[in-house]
Image 1 (cartoon, rainbow, N blue to C red):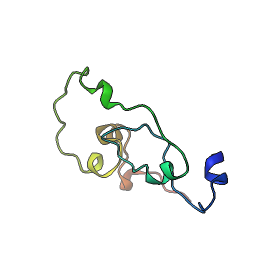
Image 2: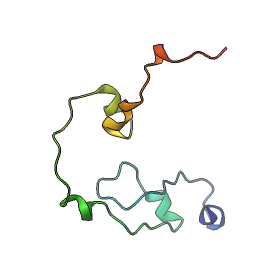
Image 3: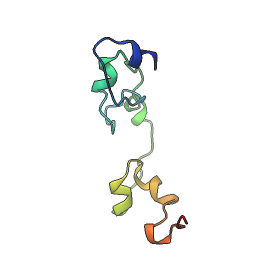
Length: 84
């Protein structure tokens, strides 16, 4: 947070505090510009994982970051409680 406020010439930057993952979902260009340089990459551990079959196509999982885990608690819009 301090870097986002103190770095000269930066007026606004959307910054994701994520690892330096090879297959990252977000771009770290703005974060690097203010001095945020992550050191860990999950790819270093990928070869030790047991591969799982790809899940069937799911519109919600494909649309939102989080993949198939998004649909575990997803409530379709027409089933959500309405505010009064």
